[in-house]
Image (cartoon, rainbow, N blue to C red; front, side):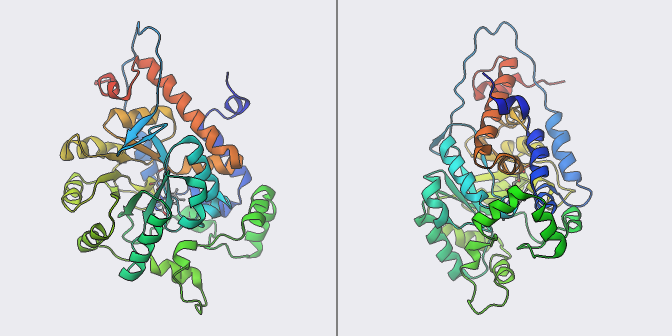
Length: 381
Ligand SMILES: Cc1cc2nc3c(=O)[nH]c(=O)nc-3n(C[C@H](O)[C@H](O)[C@H](O)COP(=O)(O)O)c2cc1C
């Protein structure tokens, strides 16, 4: 039976609308905006929409087991929570809510290195569902210490993000006068006061800080936030990757890859898996859609290499599209944050329920019962 939430908020767009009402403007624009004219968002949407399936007939009674093995670990679903920096600005305390939700639903949550919680904070909440995303610290000693802490806190996979060679402009975010951490100008204070749920969450969680890199800041620094930002703003090259590979014994996944030739070179350099992403249009709006690059990268690397995809996934049908085109796992960033901002502690559960119901509803239209059957259900004009 559909729950009340499923009747009133059956789509991710419903969560987005409710989140927008409950969030101060600067927090919503930080979460929601892309860069430039936001063409990257449109390219992702258009490319996903273009993938269609042939309906199945006379399929008999269908049953579903959505669980999925990825790199030697079984998860309850083929999707997880993507790394989002400063989730604590989007909703104060979001990192803990996401970690607990990931563990409850047995899906992975990838913590960002610029989150408002550090790996040690989340360890009691996340169990063995934690992955860790690294923005590359320039100082090798800091990198070494960070990796040791991540591993000791039980995070099993290391994700190196490579699609942020420089800052992007995100004009919509600028217009909302966002600053990190939020500075108490009269307009920001007004925006917080007029969103009491968010204000109360901040009263409980405290003002969000970039906690992990800030732990390496010289205590005498006059602006720890800016200093912390510099710590993780290294400019990695292929040698950096080789050093990281030598230091990290667990699975190493490279995130932000769109070019099949890069994917092959990354695997030759010791990467264990490739995460195809255009950062949901936040970095470079002229980049191709992630989903368009997925089949090309699959062709280039072969069937055995684990491939993750993200950017623009907005429901169960999009999950099905990604899996049909060769993804082994799919991540969602904004959707999980809309869910937390819309419903706080129950947001992750509602979104997981929504995605699994939508995935089953769409798969059953094609007659496919397993993910392996999806490629043959693709509609070819
Ligand atoms: C507000 C925001 C902050 C993000 N911060 C990071 C980050 O710190 N590290 C990272 O690798 N990716 C970051 N991303 C990108 C996500 O990991 C992911 O690639 C993207 O959100 C997936 O697309 P979707 O949001 O359309 O699902 C961020 C995305 C958003 C929306």
